[in-house]
Every structure is written in structure tokens, then in C-alpha cells.
Image 1: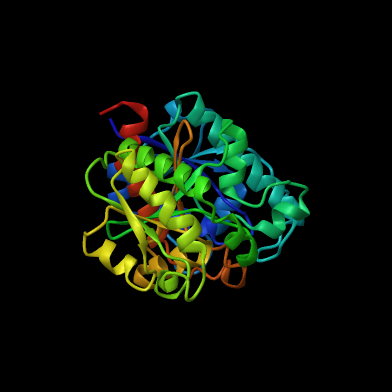
Image 2: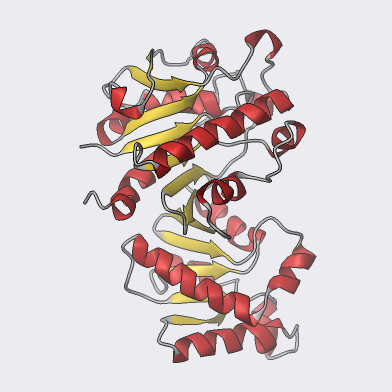
Amino acid sequence: MKPIIAIPMGDPAGIGPEILVKALADPEITECAACVVIGDRAVLEQAMTFPNMPRLTIRCVESPEAGEYVPGILNVIDLKMIHMENFRLGEVSGHCGRAAYAYIEKSAQLCLSGQADAMATPPINKESLRAGGVDFIGHTEILGALSGTKDPLTMFEVHGMRVFFLTRHVSLRQACDDIARERIMDYICRCTEALKKLGVSEGTMAVAGLNPHSGEHGLFGWEEVREVTPAVEEMQKRGYQVEGPVGADSVFHLALQGKYNSVLSLYHDQGHIATKTLDFARTIAITNGMPFLRTSVDHGTAMNIAGQGIADAVSMKEAIRLAVKYAPAFTGKL
């Protein structure tokens, strides 16, 4: 039985509908996953008219179990959120922000009720969410609220390298202030549990340094001396397999070589730059700590190219594949 993957359509005005159509036209995806899109039929039909786009037969269903998961069929739960007469590709709008939220909300309901085994998400647009009165900055915050999860964990995976984030969507100044001993200890604990949930129980986690050369014992900053090192040493005493701080100029390379099973990045761009430079398209975000699994592309809505038929669907395919890979650990359907 193929895992059922719920896919909210993303921001309708961006490249989400296009990469969904392209991904679901791939026989390899159809073979490994039963994908049901939560979105708008009219928008998906429009996406198929873009240059060089594949054509699929859209099947509207009321629930995932009613889907027909065979090549050439795109199963969609049509929420009818978009009024096509007012819809403009490539434009930020509250109309699309509200629709994107509704797709995510319905997908979360399907996962929480057990009707779907995991969720894989195309991109949404933060400006559209705000214009639509949606008081969340992104997927992670939305899903945390919908699932009753406080501070879900974000993990990137690319070519077997896993990266967690101590801080995410905050300023660099605030991120530095948030690098505190207790927070680091909490994340080491929760990241270790998240890895176990994904079936990764062997190996050592590395905590990245913040300052050049991890501060050189206070020469270039005191965060490592006062916060990071004491946190790591305390967690080692408690039996956790963790090392650090390890200089950020080498820790990701070492993880890629297999020395570490994961890296705890201290701020947003530290881990994003490392993973996306390695392979932008195949860097996939996994949200841990919730009752269900969510994977995601890690690129934006690319409004500037929406409707041209040139968006690359590699990341969407990889997000679906990772959802299939890890879903059994969450559902118990091994």
C-alpha cells in the first residue's frame, strides 16, 4: 500500500501549481506515492496550459480514500477558493494568501485524522499571507498552531546530511541573543528524539560554532564559552552523543563526510547557505515534533516566472520521496 501524501497547492499565483503538475506527471512519483492535492481545480487546469506542460486528467474527490492513484490522474480535493476572474499569476494578493492557508488547514486535518500519512508542501508567500490577514509567517508556524505543537523543529536533509536550526525567522541580532545554554540543551534533547523518530539512532550530533573558529576561547566572542560549550558538556554528562562547538567553516563538510549524523545550526542562514550551496534543488525541509510528518521544498514562490512553464519540479519530487521514506515511522505502517 502506497503512503497517502497530502499536498496543499501552495500560493496559487506562484509556481506551486506548475511544479505539482510536473511532479505528479512523473511515473516514478506515481509508483511510490498516492498523492492527493488540496487546492483549486481551476488553477491546476490553468497550469496545464503553460508552455511545455504535461497534461493530466483531474479527478475531484471528497477524501483521499476516493482517489485513483494511477499514472495520468491528478486527484484533487477542490476547495474552490480562487475566483479566476480576479486571479492574476505572479501577483501578491490576500486572496491567494487566504487560499494557501485554507489548503494547509485542510491538509493538516487529513493528517491528524489519519486519512493521509504525511504532508508535502509547495511554497507559500509570506506577503500574501499577511495581505490576507493570516497571522503566521510560514508553514512551520501555521502547522504548529494547527497541530497544537509548541516550537516545531525544522530539519533540512540533502544528500544524507541533516541540519537542525536553533533559531529560524528572526533577525541576526535576535538570533545571537537566543543562543542560550538552556535553549541549546532543549534542542539537543528534542533533535535527538526527532532523529530517533526518523529511525536515526546511531551517530553523533554536532553543534555548530557561532563566531569565527568558535570564538577561539573568547578572542572573537564569548557565546561559545558562556553558552554553547557548557550546554554541550552538560548534555554529554546526561548521555547524549553530541560534540561542539565545531567551527561552522568545517562542521557541514564533516557531516557530509559522515562524521556527524546531524548538525545543530545556530541561526537561519548558517545552515541554509551550507545545504543550498551543496544542492539547492534537493535541499528538503522536514518539520519534526508534530503528530504527523511534513516535508517541503525549500524555495520560494518565484512569482517572476509563474506561468512560463519553466519552473523546476526536482525539489517537489524530492519532498514527496522523503515523505514516503519517513512516513512509516510516524504512522506505524511499517
